Structures are given as C-alpha cells and as structure tokens.
Image (cartoon, rainbow, N blue to C red; front, top):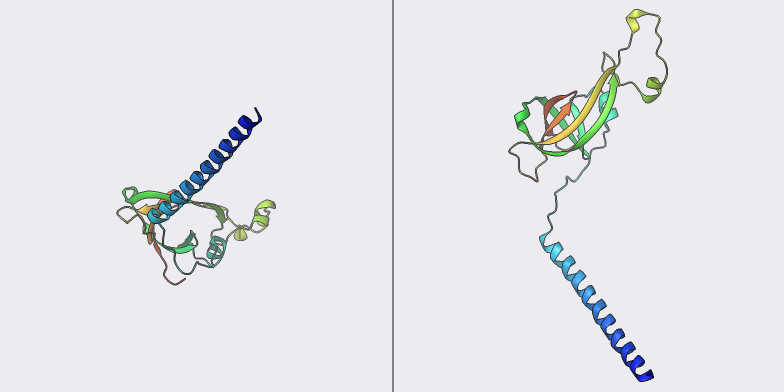
Length: 161
C-alpha cells in the first residue's frame, strides 16, 4: 500500500512538472509569435504642450488637440468625408461673444450685470467625435474630420508644434 502511494505520488509529480513546463513553453511561443506579427503605430517625436483651454484663451479656436497632437481646422466638410471613428474629444466649453472662455469658477457663480453694454454671453463650444478622413491610410492621422458644435470640420496636423 505504501509502495503504491509513493509510486502514484511520483507519477503525479512527474505529470505536474511536465504539464507546467509545457504551459511555460506554450506561453513563450505565443509571446514570440505575437511579437512577430504585432502592428505598431508611429507616433510623432514631440507631443504638443498646448491644452484646449490654452488654445481657446489665446483665441485659437481654429486649432484642436487630439491624442497629444495639434490640428488646425481648415473649414467645413461634407459628411461623406467621414472615415473610421478614431475617438471622442468630449469637451464642452462656454465662450462669450468675444471668444473668451468662461472658467469653471465663473460658471459656478451667478452672473449679475448692471450695465447692458458689458453683458457676457454664454455660448456653448462643444467638441465631439473625431474621424479619419475618408480615403486616408489606416495608420495616417495627418488629416482628420472633427465634430465641433454639431458641424464637421476638416483638420490637418500642424507640423513642429
């Protein structure tokens, strides 16, 4: 009985070690093969230091930050030019009639005015989905379609910023 127990224990340990080694070899093979077929995206050397708030404060509503890169709006485009959906900016700002951004603190406080000449309007500035321009290669992000205030705009990558 004791010999049978020892023999079954030895066989079980051998099978366990063989199985663990096989699993280790299998996972290493999967990792090696994945590295051979993986696709890598090319990123620009420099990300932009601008934020959306800074661009709006500077009066540069014609520029957008997406994925750490700076894009310049070129004008409206047709809905047919929308390609693959790349993401969502999802920003909502309020600007006045002069293009000055309302800060979060200003939006929380009640706005009272005494002089009708100094009224500040609250106009929404809503950024939405970002699409690849139709006909562009899958890896290319130099030309985009950006949704701004429910209108579509063509945007090109600003080099060197």
